[in-house]
Image 1 (cartoon, rainbow over the protein chains, first blue to last red):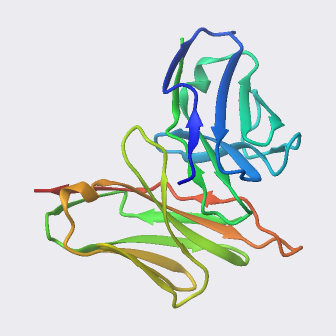
Image 2: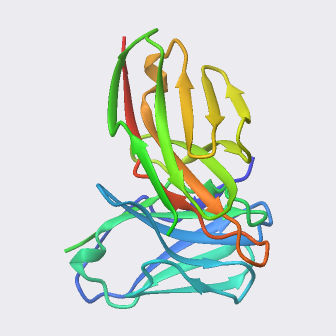
Image 3: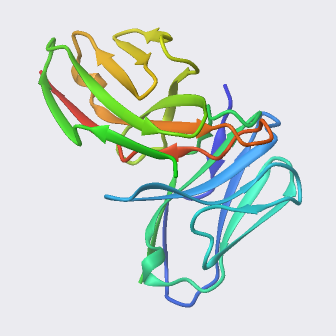
Length: 112
Length: 114
């Protein structure tokens, strides 16, 4: 089975800190995605990548950046964490552009 | 703009009480409709893909159907372990024949009581 691993289940960071969320997939998938999920707002796409060193903005990229230096790894970076970035962050991957994504277990980030 | 609306927001069933969840969508050209299951504190788990009206997919007690405007997730004789949030998502075809990003609904939280 495809596995998408997010490095942390829970994180607590202070306002203004630079935060790195790591995601690794083990099935050689081309496409990787970062979402955040908030109550009442559902899943919102932050950034995605269709290939190594490629990235595209999703619906809510402000305050975030990403890095994909290797095919299996996709990192989400919060340049200066703010309290409104407190959320569940979900990474996903897929072998093609169809929507049957495999999601990781999520990182619940709290910014205080 | 592509939109997905799921109803009801929450549904409580007794064990064995069959029911259906609804996903209504508007999309310029449908590439696929996707159902996911999400347990508390975990990421969504992919269940089904439906591509065209009339298509049906089944997995254990779940059956997904698709029309031109909506999809239903039918749950037959549910068990407590079916309790989860069920998410629907649609994907449109781009003008170049590629795939747009997924648009998710907000989900239906299903609780099955023993």
